[in-house]
Length: 380
Image (cartoon, rainbow, N blue to C red; front, side, top):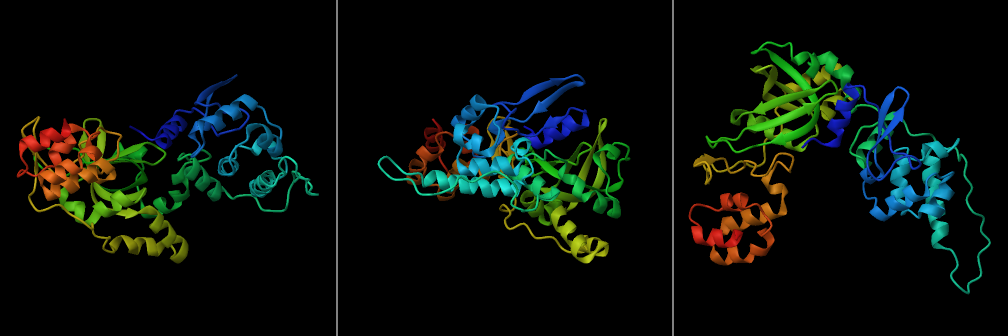
């Protein structure tokens, strides 16, 4: 259920080196490279966003490559694939003195030349192939490299994303996952991290609890947001990937859980500090957060046919690790739309769109006024 970004951070904490994508050493799947001091994990080519299986096969079959021109000539990658590989440093071992921006410029020129090659019976134009080398473009800075990794791989390979916020978190007195274990139940804390998991599982009482796990580089922080905090926190929790949360420590066996009271976008706080200084960060948490744009009807619950309980209509009815919000799935949206009309014609019209949905999710979406026979005929 954990995204690759969290797994890589856990590997770092256990002193397992994770190596970036390299066109000469990365394979189709993740691989362990043995060294004298132990093993290292190399990120796979298939992790690159948008790369096709055919491109991966041609790259692995043609390894090693000696230059960008050689890579283009033998692997025949699409231009977007080359640009993504360059931006994450997959060609750094063969770029020489050129910067990544130089390679991006060269890739565009090579692609243009390849498209204008003469066909059969045509005379070639007097053009000179683009040669490798530096064109004077500056190298990407560390933040740009990190942004490229997150955009292309969804993994912060070169360094942890939270490293950019350590100074800010020290100034406001935030507690990391490593030191949270020593906190006593009842203590008020500030915690921050990358939102690694968000779930709203069915609760027998019919109430809605948002469970969130943050990853801050030193470990995982478990959070729980009860209904009395949703108006203040839910919009921020579901719409931002970096969170700062204020709450109270509770003990769950040897683990510590934070019951959230307020949540803020950590990127917004970081921007405020950079623009207006540390005091702006201290002032911002006192402002009212954005309200949640939608809430369910007061007191409405849906029956859980398995356990005989009443469940909140926004509870997750999917396994852990799948999209947490019910409306994230097209079939769920279709089911909810049909349920709103509650007519036999509407149920029949959306049967094909929802046929692949989990039966429990579809049945739970129907209002009580819908006949049992109509709902069962749809999911069967």
